[in-house]
Length: 176
Image 1 (cartoon, rainbow, N blue to C red):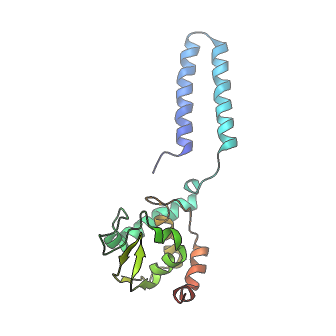
Image 2 (image 1 turned 180 degrees about the vertical axis):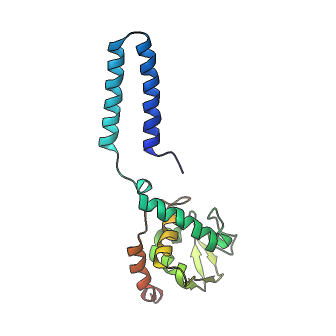
């Protein structure tokens, strides 16, 4: 994962402290005071302008990490660890128009599978995908959170409540 904003802010603070020590060593209290004021203003601006993102949520992190493990165990053999799929046999999840436009169907596919043709990025895939009936609603939500926030996707958390709601309506989705 990338450095969090807090880590970046802390690194900036250490750099400012080093400059401050250097300035104090030259007996320039006015410059030191100015530097501290600038540092304070930067932190204040950061605090006022920062928006919470899914990456900073503990729940998101837990879903994402657990989802990655579940994806590796249950999905990566076909869809590959990098989400690129396997030729014209198994469709990609990375850069997938199907994923972007069919969240509910993707959630249902995890548990119920699919047979028959599926069109992804204009290409036909006709390899059956077995569902994993033993996945709990939470596990489906975790996998969904992982795949919808990996590679080219940044959907945010797919909460278990949403996954449960979708899973309870899978029969009506498949008949459409």
